Figure 1: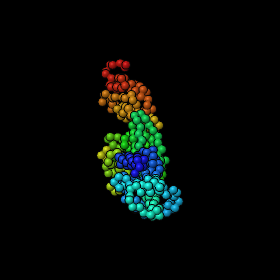
Figure 2: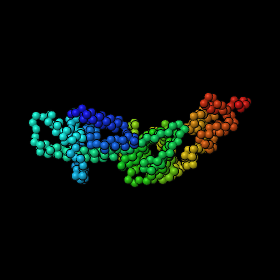
Figure 3: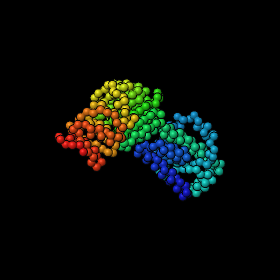
Figure 4: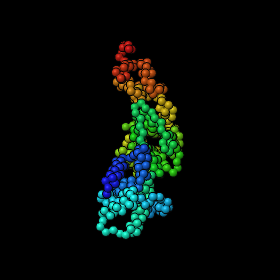
Length: 389
């Protein structure tokens, strides 16, 4: 093999190995997927070398038997077929090299003492060309089908204080709250989203052929033409339905890094015969981290989804709980050092980033003392007879 051919083959083998490792180690982003497909379609050599490295070349025969509809037409229409001959990589793995018949004949003469007739050589070369093109065509079809069957996995996240609106590939609308992350996995047969942390609101696009589900830890939320909110916390998950209906099912534990998305089952199969809870519009359920249903019932949707308008709405909630909500959105953190003060109930509506107005409101309450210390707001009880700062 000439040095230039060897260098070309080595380069393609190296690229194929890199793509194989990328697929093996984790899912590819959309840009990487598109780059892989461009690389795969660039040359039959790429397809053959990737399949050889991936160890699936033995399946090409099965793929050819399944995809015979247009193979003869492809062979008949293919141009420049006499420029393709098979060669072999180290270890016997088949790859393809774009060589001229003259180069092939020179290489054959250099490597053998006995030579077939010129007519026999042309016949062998012709059949080798046909076999090589069939291999490349079936391998490409197999590769494209394999790639199309893989779910598209997309990851989205927000930082502290950030909110983000998304439109998924199926036109589902998603709104992410502060400090939130989701992994989206779409395949030909299902649509699945994992809420990794935080809060997400979904307005699901209808697609009867592909059910939509949301996984949260050990829960699987099955959409039934719906808009709903999912808030995942360390202690449990809150599901609020604003439109339509959802079912919440118990689901098997998921392995890390969203690997479950590639083999998730339908909710009925993953559950234990019955959903944990059915929710309709205007209802909310709280499920503990253990999977136990803690509460369910009607809810004030304006209050439950106030974050979508950038607000915090609370009614008879403790100062400590409201302070924790403000801390989700702001770098200036509120710390309640007095447990008695932290338990006091308050009501109101505030912009999520308007910490100063909320702190001023706390300062007007009897017995509450507020002070600023570096980048913190400290809330304590006011000592008897002590004047305000």
